[in-house]
Length: 467
Ligand code: 5AD
Ligand code: SF4
Image (cartoon, rainbow, N blue to C red):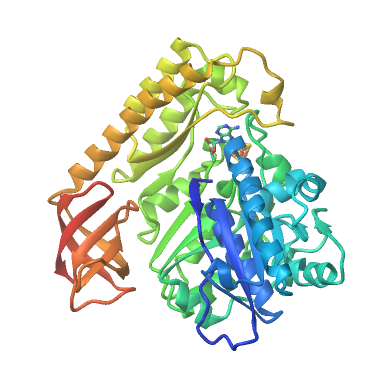
């Protein structure tokens, strides 16, 4: 999944909180799936009478939804817990309660260790068990320090209450929808197969029901999520075997859903049907996040990516063949153990060849328990830093060139939120760029036609050409 910078994503309070309702503040670290999970934890807690708040100071419960993908991400959690401990002490001194929960991938990976290192924590709950949050909190209130990290036998989605329609509405016109979780690919650098478990696909009907509910509540664009989303598989209405391509054709029939996206994909699972969906479905946006991680076959092999650089490039050529306007996005790791200057140059050449519209890049971070952690020939930190700088400069140049190439084009944008200036709205291009436009006669949720007239550091400027 695309790693996002730690973001505060408390699902919005609906404004009807009564004075004595309990309030939960949820802080989300990491990827889009954590953003989605935070909203679903909010749903689980709303059945216990909690409303979500964006103000830490007024919370009775603070939940950290954590990320374990790189060392820095996990360390951030412990420093946040240090600060929360002080806050809890101050609260308790006034005879008030403050409960602290740790959810997500650090919870899954470190379990007991969190209780040991962070004495203020009341509940540790993994990504597959958060439907049990209400019971866990009741146990904690009775004095227990609770750990819920065993993979549940039951399906958490079946045990979560559906998100209330007014809450969906308050969150805007775009939404995430998890369709698949976990990963069986075992890239040697990655903790996901251990923290999120093996690949599980949600059943077709559950997905259709959730997508329909989102659309009925005003959502126009849905991004399907999975650590390995294109490994999704299920049964069609007649029991036939379906893949992600089939699912997208079906979701394109949901009334009101104008735009579909999916992330994150593995090159090995881009099958013919999915590529056909890119050719046929106008709802499927021409944007694909397809991480390659490295451009050297030797490193790809050591990473256990199960494809070569050439296979990746040929795959992209096939996709571009059916959808020439598709924009590519990727993830890159520099300084994997054993990466030589020549290996790194191969990554730079691959980037030149593909020409990315957007990308995320990282220095390799050793993750205990992964096969990569056992490898020798570590790359020096200064070398990693130097390589990352060069790689990011190239990716940024490509991103700017992509934005510049949009100037003069007429495109459709989905209006998502108000802009900074009166009368201004911010929309989303098919290629995920933010677009500022004066659109006085249109409203949030509309898809309007605009002409791009300029670029800013992280967005585009446009004028409306039609509705
Ligand atoms: N070190 C650095 N980057 C990593 N990623 C995953 N594991 C590691 C690691 N150990 C990156 C990959 C992945 C993205 C979500 O995070 O590029 O695609
Ligand atoms: Fe991690 Fe590789 Fe699975 Fe992606 S495909 S989640 S990088 S193991």
